[in-house]
Image (cartoon, rainbow, N blue to C red; front, side, top):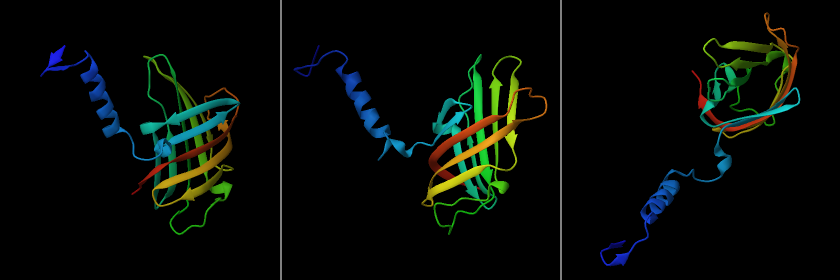
Length: 170
């Protein structure tokens, strides 16, 4: 095809537009800027990333929640942990007393009649905040979570890592 006396290959405008869009939308800096939680739960590796991973830092402490996009017919794993500690002015790595931290893990079967299995630890949750620069938080966590009443499954062992941008809590 010819435009203005210049031979143009079909589809090249689409490719050029896609390249410009990638450059405009691409994150500045390292790809590691995404919020990520990885965990091994009873030997099985899980990874949560992107907009469904939230870290909140506020006067009540630090709360982390990671989930995935719900798809009909799938199992939706969700993990969360929290410690009532203040990060501003702290020295890192910071290891709160495991007796004050808690964690939860759920698996929800997404269907017309969803079912959920849940596990919880209200103490003995080991969290290490490796670094915090005021906006980004990194660290590790580990716990044994017991099934909540109504869940006939055995306890689960959780070990994981996290990193991401925090939001300010109220």
